[in-house]
Length: 324
Ligand code: SAH
Image (cartoon, rainbow, N blue to C red):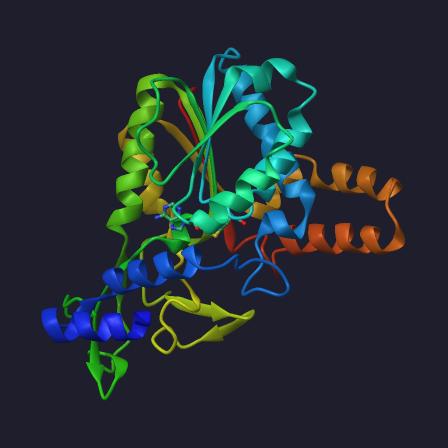
């Protein structure tokens, strides 16, 4: 039975479906049945654009770990995709043997297909690693966490201007919105719940987190739900489970959870963040040993990740730390 017919049956039996239930069902199916990344897939993410992205995040984690006193610790990634970011981060830090030997890597991934891809990507590294489907449980140790384009895949609820929740209905074997009206507001309890567990862990055991996503500030306004298939926008209701469904991340809502837990935090654009970490120097260094084609890719990758016309401002980094 296709996901569409399963959803239609669910609506017939249980009534109209909240957007969050729909998003969860679609994305679980979507990620469990494919590797969606890259030119031949549906979309491309920062670590797939340039190796420098993962390398710089690895350097940031190494620095945060040293500032915390080089403890025995957890390194954790939420939604690691193909494992490219973690591979590049570990490559960039492998000369610091004490870092690798002090870490236990926890990869949080629901998709069996992507878990397998991640295991292949990390097979050359000797640090202790394990895979789990949810953020918890984690051992009681300092935590260093990376999440790139993870929260945007988590389910959101949408509400119309009058406060009523948006639902999905079924007519003639097709899915439809319950009203012809653009929603006014979105919330993501699933995101806040993970954030809450993360903040509690950082508060109790120390550490730091980098959460990077296509996000907004100043509170939710309007509808940001989108479907992407083969690098173009699609109708979110037309091919359930066959397109990537995302919503922009409410960065201030995540930060408020950290604030409440008494953690330090900051939100900055991905462009300024990567520039501070030395993306230009690292890219120029790599270009020195690169072919003409690789050089072009490295330079256009840097431009794409940092320019404010591309990913430099729309993508934001929420930095959270237990250190004051
Ligand atoms: N961070 C990667 C992949 C981003 S795509 C990159 O930057 O390339 C989103 C990732 O989150 C995928 O690996 C997907 O399988 C995973 N994912 C989505 N929902 C999840 C959930 N609820 N729990 C754990 N992983 C999830």
